[in-house]
Length: 109
Image (tube, rainbow, N blue to C red; front, side, top):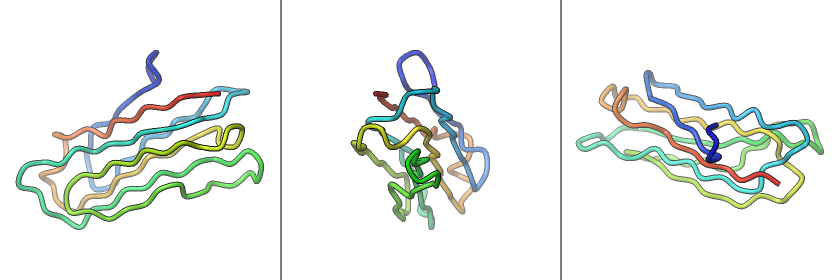
């Protein structure tokens, strides 16, 4: 993550993941994850966001969706619950690789 509370990834293969490992003592209040569509792409893609729940010690699925081209998620989280996030995007067409970026932003409490 950069100083503005955001980061990104370049899709380089069918499975692309961003891990936001958090800051000790802080939890995440909200996030946005966006993989923009690519002109001419029509695939069997999907995206998901998982959060590490400090209360249960388990990873919870926060968002999941199937798509033919790009995806966007945005969610407010219960304060004090999630300390880490995993952003994931799958695409089965090589035209999505390298060009688009998965971008995310988070706010901490």
